[in-house]
Length: 70
Image (cartoon, rainbow, N blue to C red; front, top):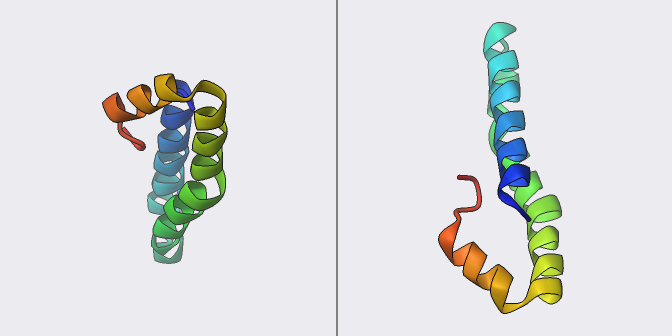
């Protein structure tokens, strides 16, 4: 997973937050933690596993330098 993908997930979270505020819909704001949990479990963790198997120590060094959600 590269920094661009992480920024994409963060940008999507911010879009969802902005839309919830714009629509004045508190239910949509309550769903944001669910989005983060879902993305971590079903998107980010599988990608990290695949990148670890493909790039090994190089990817582990990258993970040590870069936070998951920036």
